[in-house]
Length: 409
Image (cartoon, rainbow, N blue to C red):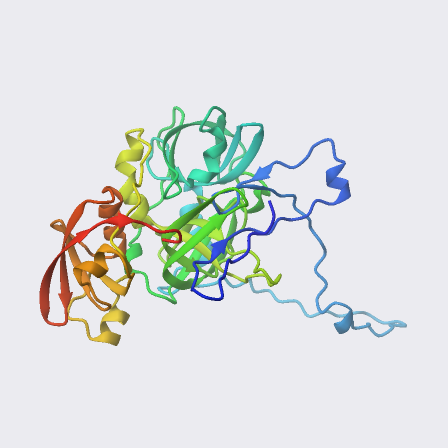
């Protein structure tokens, strides 16, 4: 799999596509009788990854320091008796304590099928072994194959069964066979996230060793992102993504993005690749909010493949946040804020405007943009939806005929 560039157009703004740098295979690996398996990349497609480890030279040649010659005497080196200090998160919880709390509910996933082997990450959500992960992690086993999971801190691979899939939103549900009494993750409130919040990612990065996850940390860099992951033959668009600078690598797919309390607020899914001019994107990763995952679990648990019919209101929206409310003086503290109205759509024809706040659709209360997506994804183009909207101090009603989502939405 080659690096997937951010796709741009000089005439119109485009949704960036996300891809993943492939680590080149050295000759010693290419000629090895035991080639490395595929590692599920944090996008909808997987690539072959070999781990190349090089020595890190502090300062390199430019900063080379030669030690003075010692002709005699005793060399004395100052040594500290203090233990290394743990990195702390807001609220006082340290990252090591957070990892200890959560990691046993994080599993490494290995999938064999369709003539390939893929690896990724998953999260245990029930004590009897339900595991949520990305759909692209288990895609090779959909038409027949095997799935095994390895709990963090162990080396035993346990067989798992695929329960339900959602290719559109890139979510899948597994069950560890004959499991009971397992530790579980706790879902947090992704709709309450703000840019700048601290986050920690845990996952089977590069498939280095099942059961020994990699931990990285960072912040929420942006909210409500729409990204397109693509190859030369196919692509998928994911909406309402959390952007983070916590390092996400191939194999992290399906793993948790945690808040400062250790609650899961997202599922690591994608990372930006390389621009057309060869410039590499830096520290731009994406996670699916847990509000999206929660909205799908009932159907996934029932063994259904969740289908999005591609219905589209015709607006770009963002969840109401305290900062948005303060900045623009909105009179309500929840809802989906219309950031722009797409010309030629049902929303434009109905008269929606930038700055409107959608608070209900067909009678369902809307607390954020994920609620809009949950309601609309179950509908089809051509259907009419009834919107309640706050505009300034007014409460307005709109009937909007749904269209079909164009490419990039």
